Length: 234
Image 1 (cartoon, rainbow, N blue to C red):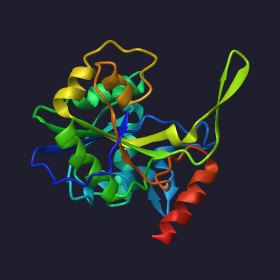
Image 2 (image 1 turned 120 degrees about the vertical axis):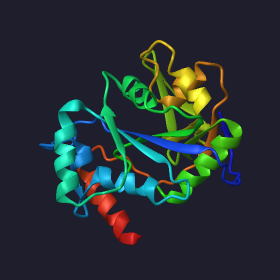
Image 3 (image 1 turned 90 degrees about the vertical axis):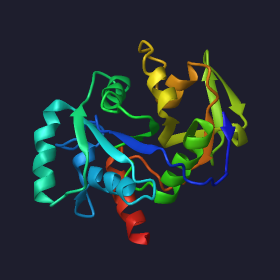
Image 4 (image 1 turned 90 degrees about the horizontal axis):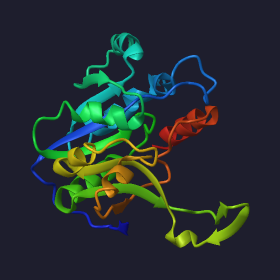
């Protein structure tokens, strides 16, 4: 991986974002999936969609939802008068298969971002920088440098790692369409934990662009309180 901080001129290719919303409410101890929980009166997923809609990149929005959740999503859109244009398709067995389903809707060349539905605080500047960099360099993975000391445990032994060389990967992860579509033609492997790992399997060098520590992923109950505080600071 290589770290890049360049801010480039926006490419004129068509932009897309695949927002993957396959999570459940298990770790949140919630009755509904975490992407539908209210954050300042609006479902988390709507905040996430708005971030891309309000960016200069203006990507076409593709939402990947489990089929069982699509009717509930329609109800939420009516309830909250949510009219941001987006296309919905069904999720798959794994995140890999869900992203692949989203890619199946893209028929034109361009630049494609993949984003977690439960990262609602992504800054529009981060989104635009990632699209810009990927358009010219093939890909751009948003990540932040580790603030904590890191230890690797292997065979019951632990060893210190250099935290200056450790980056915590976030989303969006953005790719030229020809690269990402080719990568997702591969057979699924359990090692494919994110889109960068799928693309890297092709031998493609992965580029990092700086993210922000506020680009949190809503996973546990306390994350909603933290997100509300961060929204209040904005």
